[in-house]
Length: 256
Image (cartoon, rainbow, N blue to C red):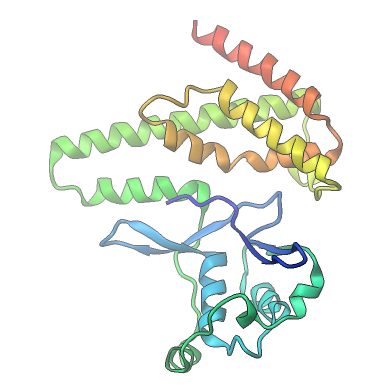
């Protein structure tokens, strides 16, 4: 299971006010957690696990969105939650937007310590799941199929990673430390530019209609932070699209 960036929103229809909390910063990657060997998948992610634990632990009639955000900041260790919008909503009781958790559930949850296990980069989760399937498969034929799928997945990731790196190097000639590209959307224009660039990359560089298109899509999501950083750094969508087109054309010529 690979999860993309999560956004939880609360809004007031009467005044059209919006308050949003995200699972990570724009440039960060999230983490999957709680690997289930029986179901052979990750059951949650760091943000969702902490968010649900808080919701089931506190009295939502008294706890505010600000209290919940503080809890997320305190308990999340590997990524950082962010919030946007009308901060006055953060002062409101959560129960104005969500039904309160039954008292018996709150008492049980309070007695339980939140322990996040099996924390794994989201973009590595698919590989870990597939590796475990290979290790536990008893049928030799099926195991070989899984091994070929695992190897193909690595090749796909290498291709996507190489393409994104080439695009980044075209924008920034020479070696560039990724942290130098850290930034936030300065305006709605930056966010729109990122959406435009991400969609163009998705439809230009790879064949998303093949059997493994969903897997390619999920892997690509883990590299979208690079385009987010380019947009917040000040590159216009037209310039980035121009670079994507050039890199895509060169990649195609290699395989022809």
